[in-house]
Length: 207
Image (cartoon, rainbow, N blue to C red):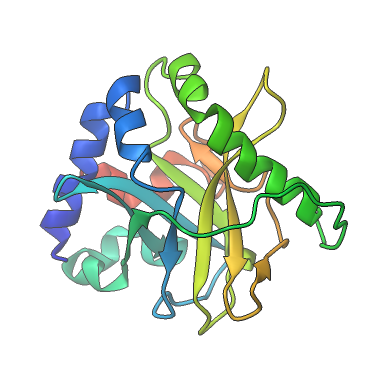
């Protein structure tokens, strides 16, 4: 996609991110997105920007270190386009405690939270609009592997926050690298010198 097309798609997201009804309609398109092997795995974070492309919810992924003004002339070449779709996942309750930061049990619980409660969460948290982007730890992805990333809700029903759960398709299991309080929705943005500062998200300045 051309950079201008990506910016237009992001603007269309901006236009609806305070409208719970329209957001629900778009999120009903699927439960996540597939990240292909052409995502360059480097640095510490990925910026995941939602947009509406040809009427469909789509996420645009770019390494945080590439999301800078200096790359504007060829910024689109750094962006991986990930349309939202329905991805197969077994959400049966499990007692599998394997994993690093969280267990498979917790990962499945968060994806189930999204399935069961996302409509209510969108309605309750619409306020000034839901996230413009997600700050994702690079550790969630392995170079040259296809990944499925699922929408999720972390926390409890009184205080859910947007989350992503990533599955490494080469391994075929839920990837349990870093989810709790590490996939960060923005806004709110962090301080000037932090990875979640508003100035770190260059693409947003073009919308």
